[in-house]
Length: 350
Image (cartoon, rainbow, N blue to C red; front, top):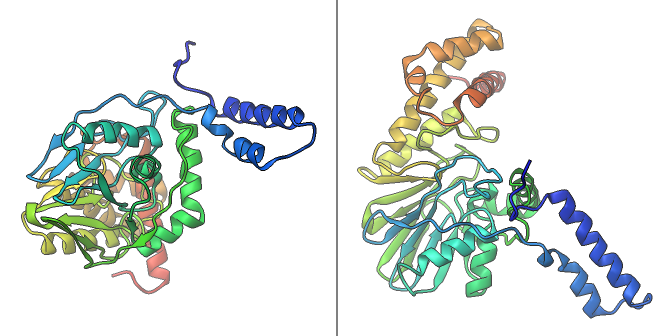
């Protein structure tokens, strides 16, 4: 089978890095100078994944632009370009709201930003700790120097503790080495619910209403444009990763966000923006959650619980149009039933 010439198998990359280090050791005859140590530490720079093809940015409002990711899952073919990049052009500079999942994706985003404005990037925000949304910080820091990089306190701590390196490895493996060369740059600032940030003529307000997709989700309201970047709290016709999330938490978060930002254009991390993104996601989650609680109450086995959920028209109507449905809906249902059981044991199930 022919291999993409720009894609390097991650195992081969590790072997080559080891060989480089070994040859350096041999070459200095046992003398391990600081320059050589630094050179070996950065040996991965000899092997970097291929550039990501340009994707023209789309203007969503006066100040907000999006680089759309048509795929919802990382593959060698898309080189990890699986989540939307949103950026805001202000008088002070460009603000990144979820910047992508690799240094190559960030470099592509910078090229595309340059087609819109010559202003520098002045700040980065991350919606949550899944690496496809923030690992491209490497590229922005490299191009513009150290930047304020904001995330919810839970997200900031999770990235620094384990999630950052976990996602570095996962994306490199899933893309067959296409993201190689990306370095983890963790968030260096905290942002909490209600915090507002003024960048010249644009105000960005943060929203957090508890656990939804993850415990530390932030949504970013571009106040003047009535546009809100929702990260993965809601997706457009995609199956979300709910391993760390909550169904009732998501329903609460969506209701609170709609009340706080009525009439907004919702920009998801995956899929197309629209005024209906939150409604679509809420209907799906309500159909899953209400039937999962019923399945738990009735003691149904997993196959029976899945059948019950799939009979609900709010769920069934979305099967054909939702990417990743067949491979993930069973897990979705199981996670919902397990959450119902856990909340019942805690005395928190309504």
